[in-house]
Length: 177
Length: 256
Image (tube, rainbow over all chains, first blue to last red; front, top):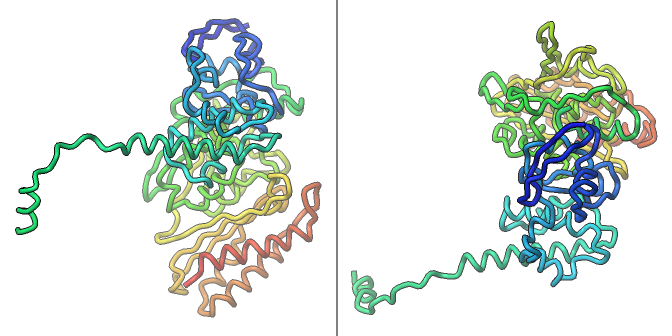
């Protein structure tokens, strides 16, 4: 048994674990965070994705002890105090799920992508999510949600700051000169 | 264990059951990526592939390697998987040795007895078998600088799963001046051991129309190749796709 300490969704955890326990099992069984799903156990489906020190990794291919001293974020971490983030709300608005089993992992990877690249193209989104499988096939709706999020963020940035009104005289001077 | 992507998968299948696993990600030396300009580049054993994709030397100078890494697995997995890990798996469908061959890469191996460098061309000994000794670990990959003004490319053909059944890496420099023209090509995934085809390099220095040179080179490569038949593809199909990919790579690189 080893004692490890790590932060999960902002909370510090200190627990005992065997060295061969996967981060996936540790999170689900010991920390009781259930948005992280077990699908294939071999790094193909992407459902067990978590952000480990900010980067998405498949937690079925990470040992629990490797999280020692690190920070883990799951879908719960994107919605502190139960308040859904805009991206999560957009997944609901665009009906980007059917059974919902894969949704937490897609939201996490999409969140990371948008942080790296606030204005991704559809192709970039498809490429970036290629390590995730949605058996219901709601890929198009998810891409819509992500594109919509990027659009909204862009508009927010583009709202012009209030400018002092220009005097007409200045304009005339500019033209004549 | 660096990324552990391969090791943990093998352990789950009970293909290997090590008594101890040592995490080497905490060793600073292994995390380094070094660009020594005219002396080449060095990639540490625990550098994740996603970091390689963002690294500037790979954008132009070592483009074939970048092409290869960008096609490996998926963006999330690439946050964990490493180039050396991929190479050390030494399975026939592994892609990374092929581009490394055209850059004359060497694997740096370390043990308590010291360090040595093993050329990638001698590193893979057979199916899942490398030149590493029982007490050695691979700590870095060194790539020689490519010729000035060279361009490189990596292409692969996969079966209906994501495993390559043939891959090709090629490099070309000074394509307009025959006597200084330098062309390199390597293929992999065709047989357990990937190979560089040195035999095409001299013929490319002759003065002849490019399509003719390409045709001859492809013939030499096909003659040398010893494709295997396995669960992924038949030998005949592999050989045919080798022709298609080499033709495509040469045509792209030697375009006037």
